[in-house]
Image (cartoon, rainbow, N blue to C red; front, side, top):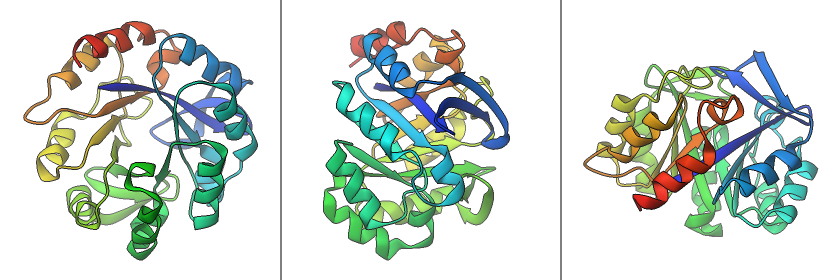
Length: 243
């Protein structure tokens, strides 16, 4: 299992939101590049970057910062947040981003998703962000009537090879992931799944490693590592031992 340190960028700063609420923001750093380098130095094998401004406004706002990070660290990066055009995907991939994470546009337009999967299925992920089992969109500000499991099946049918599952209510709360919902997704589809939302400590990592019948590809952690609740190096080493 891969541990993905999250770097959420809002107004050029590294922040975390509680339950995806833009009105409830905690700032952690004025320097996203320094944060990225810190997590890589702590053993991160991947980085997960979110352009929160992009997610809110529907177009990338922090590309320059993202590009600086891709050119300054030695590990692969996946990026999401407001990416809704082919041109934006091309721009990110050309800058060195290894995987582009789609959200709203994938929910609204499956023909678009079919088209961009042609870039290479290993280069595209979809973020399945759910609240009470229903898919959210537009930076988590809108909840649809689409069930997460139903959407996951549709994505599998289209050939998606990487799914990020987030329980919005758990995100930034340090209450532990929604293991029940995550297990339901894992038994519904065979797509590799990255868990996100709620990770509080090393015990949560151990529980994710123990999920059966199918293992989790990775886990995204944010607030826990920023507030010292989870030691990133220790988490990475644990996952390496269980590889």
